Length: 258
Ligand SMILES: O=C(CO)COP(=O)(O)O
Image (cartoon, rainbow, N blue to C red):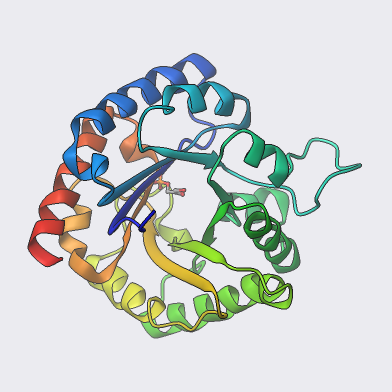
């Protein structure tokens, strides 16, 4: 299947309970069913619920183009890794994506670059597109952010390159200072950084699309224009109507710029 021109992804983090997750996903499934740009594959919608909800979410999205995946994946294939979930089990559950290296996991669970590189490789090995989260801690100049992200991207892809793995990767540029904030990073800042990130080299056989996350919500995708390949949403997609508005904005943008 061709890659969508615009991605809209939502991580539910640990905000919703089980039933609340399913109710929200049913609303998203209905949105996907009625929206031509999603049906035609121009907009790729994906949802990352908490692990226990994945089988039920898979049922809800079964007859829709909505992709789903996990918020994390184990770096090891299987074995004595209490509390972890393997890439192969996610594959069995029909996940197509695995989020890796979110700032909250780096902060609370001290995930380091070696773990992240191993998770990227493990995901690609099992046909899961990594949603690789990278972003600077403090706001500075766009050039500094690009340099730091470039280094983190190279580190995250090192193991996959070493193993000669192929696949597509979503690079979620998430400046840490803009996550959980009242508003996203300034438009000009996001555009400058994402324009730079889209030029970064990748190992042969690995393709990359850049999406922005960090207090993204209605109005942002149009302001960013063609500088990003989509958005990675959190809180501001909890209201299904807000998500529907963002989908509408993305389809207007597609008509304008592509
Ligand atoms: O971290 C994010 C997406 O994974 C962004 O979350 P918020 O949009 O809630 O800041």
